[in-house]
Image (cartoon, rainbow, N blue to C red; front, side, top):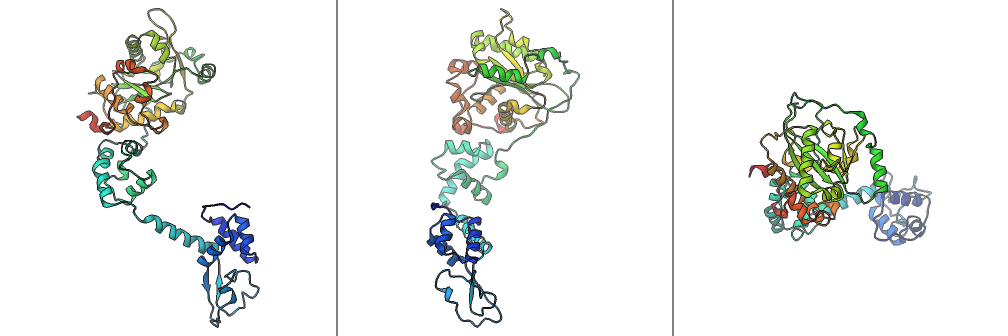
Length: 399
């Protein structure tokens, strides 16, 4: 077997070493079996052998103490021998290896000056503005000259001002199934979904692989079935660029009004290009697809709406993931009553300026420039926010 270079001995390797020693195999054969050089095996045995003594020991050294195999594992006289005996055990060897490994990795390879620099620059961004670890590594690679896993270790050890509670976490929120008097549930005509099922969506994409896909959803404010303002969110799947519009109520007529506004804002030709396919869930606010698909002036079909399967939000997982950013700024239970559309533009600008690993550490804003162009981005009222000025905390709307 070809020797495996630069690999530590595994638990399985040590089990094989012990088994082969018990059967009197030499170091060369053991090394061939585990893919290591014989000197590696010899060093392992001498380093981790341990002394086994009995009350009948005569304190005379065994001949194997100073020559291979350096242990008495395979000796036929082992049980009755009264000399000083050494043995090799995979359990003992592996436990000693782990202790050395943990100890070697417990020492901090960072100076007090570097800690102070991180606390002065990085900690405020993560604590007060909810920047992610990936975000600060992109923005301040000159300061963070170590790996992300090391950074997490420093946080766990408490040597930084940042604590685990300051790190972005996945926010879970349930769908509000209650409706108020002002927001009565709209009934769905089953016929509207014919030709718009998720299987139809997959067929369309298979035949139109370059189609621009927009995922659509809503985000509600204060729970409890009181109705009121909510967000209509639209996400360009290919580059995670999100638009946020404030609706007075979670009803289809307000969704239609928003799309009429967008069509007028960017023009029908651009709307057809950018909103070719819209994928949404089965919320009652989306039960009037034709009002979005059809241009009210010409009667032309300018978009195609499809619906996810019931209880399959993962089919539009990109927008669900992006909602986490909204919840950093407006945690679940926050009221949207005092918000304006300008607040939505501000929130969307900060979210779209945040670098993403999925975009090769670029922000959705940067990537969108190649697909939407600057003119459309300006029309959507989305602005580029400098990395250190990005704020994904509740403080954003209190400034």
